[in-house]
Image 1: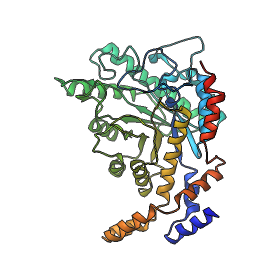
Image 2: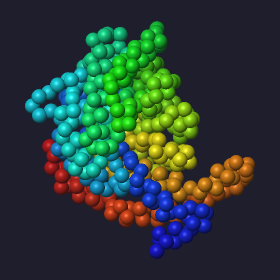
Image 3: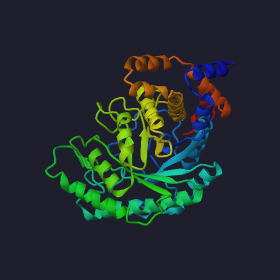
Image 4: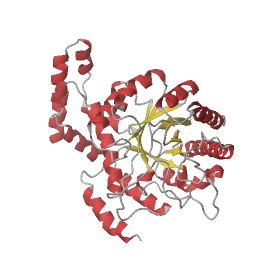
Amino acid sequence: MSYQSAKEKYSRIGVDTEKALNTLKDISVSIHCWQGDDVGGFDSADALSGGIQATGNYPGKATTPEELMADIDKAFSLIPGKKKLNLHACYAIFDGEHVDRDKISPKHFEKWVKFAKERNMGLDFNPTFFSHPMVKNNLTLSSPDETVRKFWVEHGKRCIEISEYFANETGVPCVMNIWIPDGYKDIPADRLGPRARFKKSLDEILSVPYDKTKVFPCLESKVFGIGLESYTVGSSEFCLTYAAKKGITPLMDNGHYHPTEVVSDKISSVLLFNETLALHITRPVRWDSDHVVLFDDETREIAKEIIRADALDRVFIATDYFDASINRISAWITGGRSVQKTLLYALLEPSSLKELQDSSDFTSLMVRSEELKTMPFGDIWEEYLNRENVSVDYLSEVKAYEKNVLEERK
């Protein structure tokens, strides 16, 4: 009865809730694997580094591939909708033979492919340019040391190969995102040189032949990093320009900009000049703090911009955060559900709002926008969960899993 009543109320403002629900269930959201183990991975015992920090020490962190997969299964069972799994290269699984990142190959990800195929989902991928001894003086692909630069170029090439392997095996295109932590703590004497070397490295990585219908290389910018406060090689201007010139996909992480900037305002501009756009959705409480995504204002605005631009087939949506201060499975579920909530909220926005703007009726636009905030959105969301056979209450299941599984880990 609640849904039927809500459906009628939305119908009065020109919104078809059935159409919204049917659209939502087919929107793929790529969920990051690294929430489950605080971005540790399995290829090295080195501490997390490269401007990345996971704070907190909540009990039950996954420490093996098997534990991480079990936790992903639990989280995904409580996140509705169509999902992909987003992997970092540091999650390679070695059975006896260990190789460095410049020598990883598809065989080191066979277990992840098997995991994905059994669950009928695709895989996305990220080269791992951090937490490694070959990150010299905070530099990787932009390093003036050719040994260092070539090591990371080879890593990038290997990741192109692995991404195509993922796409071929799962039948789902793979988004491969390049982000580097390169930069300087204090004012550099040369800003052009590192960026020229970064450009050269990217050109070399992308020289590897790959099927452009199956692999979508992305380039992610950042405004600054911890220990890289004065200069970041992969700035927004560099990454947007390079992506547009090379015909690859720009990736925007909404924690990677100046606090006065918002990604929601950038989406419409980027879509006018790029065929595709990738997003890493996070919650930057104080700049790039990677808090769990919530149903907050900026996440809603990001979703609105995608829907308003009719760009669901052009925007790759992924989550990216890591909170070690709370139950990690709950963090996954809360963030995944929040992204889907915002998409549903955007799908329930009437097209008449655009007409009010174009007719300069800003009084009505403001009033109608405010009225939307008290529409019975929650009833439509619960209907979606019911249709997806996912429990509205996930906290009790998470607590039971914590008691029976996480607390048993040593």
